[in-house]
Image 1 (cartoon, rainbow, N blue to C red):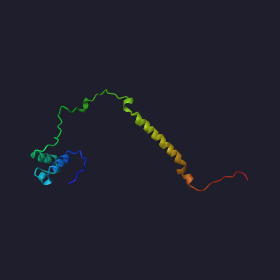
Image 2 (image 1 turned 135 degrees about the vertical axis):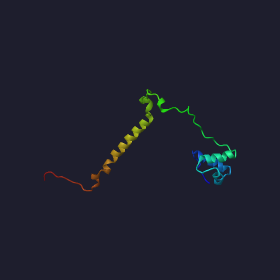
Image 3 (image 1 turned 45 degrees about the vertical axis):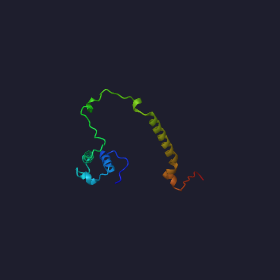
Image 4 (image 1 turned 30 degrees about the vertical axis):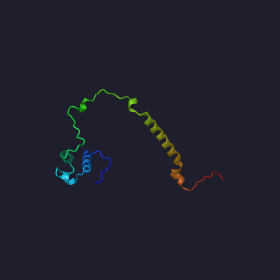
Length: 122
C-alpha cells in the first residue's frame, strides 16, 4: 500500500510503522476499527514495537486566556515589517504605472476607427 511521503497525522505514522513491520489491515482489525489511532497503537504495543508515544498535556501547563496582560502594548515599529511595506509600495507604484501606460490602448474611444474633424469657417 503506497502512502504519501509526508504526513503529519499520528494515525498515518502508526500505519507506516505497522506496514513496515509486515502487519496488514487484517491484523489491526482484531483490535478495533482501522480508522482509530488506538487500534494501531494496540497492535504495535502487543508486539513490543516502539513508536512515538502520544504527547500528554498536563493541566497545569496550559495557561488560560485571561492571564494575558491587559496593559501590553505594541508600537508601530515592532508591528510593521518595513521591508515588506517598501516592497508593497514599489509594487503598487509599478502597477499604477502599468495601468496608466496601457490606458490609451484600452480606452474604448481609441477602438473606433472613425475620426471626427470639425472645420470652422470656409
